Length: 467
Image (spheres, one colour):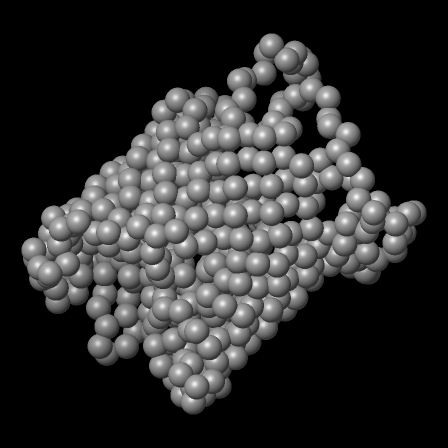
């Protein structure tokens, strides 16, 4: 398809989203709607007026979000008071996926994932969390592939009992209160150790689950700063690189800060990956991420710049490059709907510090057209890799039925700035409906126009049960 046709397709998608936004914004404005909080006091709700609690799969000890007397617990020699409770909960996902791609094999499949967690609550600040996913193995989902008809079709068996999450977190001041009975010292140090999710720069720099030890100092205050948090991190296992593949020789050293200013929240994150190529590793890398989140009037904004530098030879896991991202959103008066416009630019070949096998690329946050579902073989409708590219997404998110029904309409695309890439523009829709207390139905549909290639269209229906 020529450039004029691609431009018309992009404009058509933008017109659809803009028309929906106009239809939703102007009726609210004409009715004199406002998003201001009401100044009228609400009556106190008695226990009988409160909604019924939705319990987890298993509860031993104090109830999750339960009411009534608090258990006395028991006192440790350190002076800490523990009130143990064991909660078992999970998240079951199943989807039917279909992608029509004339230039390649069509994809049709059924996929499933089951996350199960055992949560041992000791105090509000100390806990142990154990997690498994018996239907998912290194990003591969258990299910059935109908197409393509090749050696990989048929039943996909990825049953396993590998531990996906296992960590303890706590706070030194709460574990050893006798060290500071007056609570006047600097013992409020939080820490976590074990296999845990690591997520920084909204998934651009880190989006993985690794074996790590982290220690955090909160409430660091000095002139001109409302609050500051500082986190040091050391990771030694389960480290996926930017190619979504584990580097068994890698170690992570990281320093992450979040600073609340009067008008903005600023994040400055630094990380270094140690991985000796002579020992089978994928190479050392240095990473920097800087972000600022704030409001300009009624508009929410977030600006990010992330950079990566290969210390050794460049490869698919580590290379030199930058990715710049700007996010804006606005809630029209009189409602809860959201208009968003996100843009990005990838300079050279940016690489994330650590990504899980199912996380996709660093541009997944741009919109639903760029987001990897993390279930089955279906990927993002538009590539979420950040190599020499510019683009963005314009979308409108609508809420109905008290937030139980959601609809997102989005138009987006990416323009390759190199000579060997592929431009892509598309439109996408997502419908979500809450059913009863534990179920969510999600329906996605998209159509994408690709330069010098055939158009691609697809859909997926997902059913999620949270228990």
